[in-house]
Length: 254
Image (cartoon, rainbow, N blue to C red; front, side, top):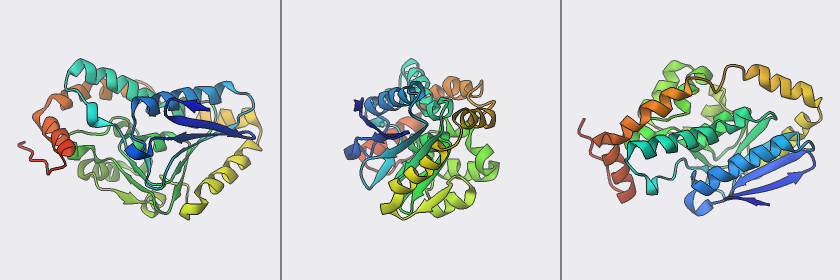
């Protein structure tokens, strides 16, 4: 089944959502965003599905983050985009059922945030993780309110301020990734783990997720929604995004 730009299939009690725009490195296009939302809604509504797996099509990318090719610097439009994007990135947290991200390649920006919003990350040994928005004169939205609780404030600041990628092994050491497996074994490993979860009592599993996720998705999201349009209006963001699209080095003035 095709939902937007996401392929949706079930294998027994497991739903697999495959982000399917490999030519654009599975960036968070309108089709990808719609597919993730619709797919996880379907997971929630289907009593036969116990666990969801999100992965990316192709060998290069899980998800390369926001598709900035059509970015507009109008603050109202940026705010609308932030509301839509944060809704998608929070969807794995808000799904009643466990969500596993099987990260098959780069997970940058919004792709990284989609992965950390999942309950578990199983990573290919080729996977890399980053919040590189600083290189565009921006900051991550969802990760800015989540990452410090996962890996500590200093490391979260380092990742956000430098924007450099980390390997799957380092992500495992930091506790972001549950396990790292050979690239060719990724989906099989994710399915095996999902089957183990699916074999447990359904209500107890869902309650465990709910209890551990208590307090998430609250007022802290308002900071990103209300504050980030101002970053987009700054000349640094305009220069960073322009340089990225023109494939040149950014020359920040401030």
